[in-house]
Length: 306
Image 1 (spheres, rainbow, N blue to C red):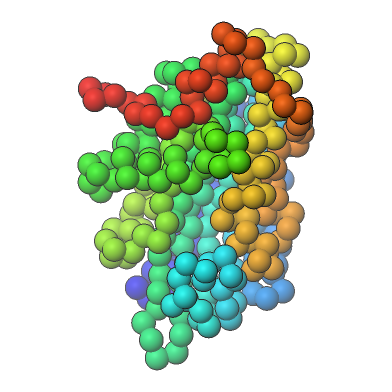
Image 2 (cartoon, rainbow, N blue to C red; image 1 turned 90 degrees about the horizontal axis):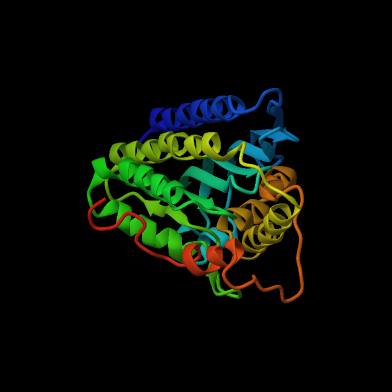
């Protein structure tokens, strides 16, 4: 790995941000992303893009950042003490889309690259990322499509890759205090360097490139589904779980805040509106109950013959 490799990663990420924004804008009659360029006093900066009050997307953000500094924050070194007292670079694209229609799931994706360096020693580098789906009124065929696309992204790198990173996603996006997954899962990976730089970079690219293939067909199918106040209220209630996870467990949020990142860009993942109700329980046999009983539990979405 050399400086040219790092520049190639950065070029891919900037292009990925452009392509994802263009694909999401294609679902909107008028709304477009606004871009906010920012600089980090400690080093680096980024491009935050936010789309608000769209016909389809109530609020969504697609961020690129490339930051560097003299020392990684505690959230990055707690499990890896060998990273302490190393200069670092961190770059990535992170996005969260909160649709307006409760029948369109919320989605999240992230791909990232880290390098930690110390004079006289080999750099320590790794890739991470993934994507996951958070439905409110799920359709089984949509969740299957999401996971089929995730498997397609992983297949060139080995048959064991999808089940491994699917399981990691189920375990990571889990609200321990609620005893439920955040949604219907997807992929999550981190600390990836064992395949060598070129193959690891290719895998990260595959994950980033497959996000649109996984998500946009679901938007197109569900964005015009009729809904009423009941569905909207449930959507806002379940968005509260999204907030809970991001503020309590999410590594990216912790890393961003602890490293002195730009707060507005870090917290753009929050939904524009969310509700909490005391001790609310879904009515037995209702569509809301089906979410809890069928979709918020880790499982094989593809089946043996898929």
